[in-house]
Length: 45
Image 1 (cartoon, rainbow, N blue to C red):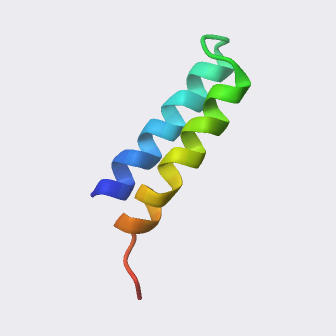
Image 2 (image 1 turned 90 degrees about the vertical axis):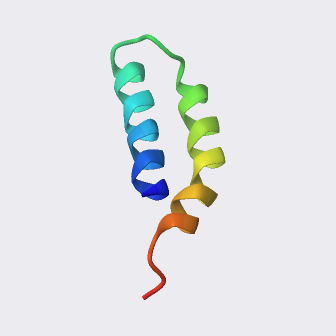
C-alpha cells in the first residue's frame, strides 16, 4: 500500500507540472525521495 500511495504522489506532481503549477526540478527531487518508499512497498517475488 505504501508504494501505491507514493506512486500516486509522483504522478500527481507530474500532472501539476504539466499544468505549469510546479517547476520541473521539483518533480525530480520528489521522485528521488520517493523511490526508496516505492521499492520498500513492492513485493519481493
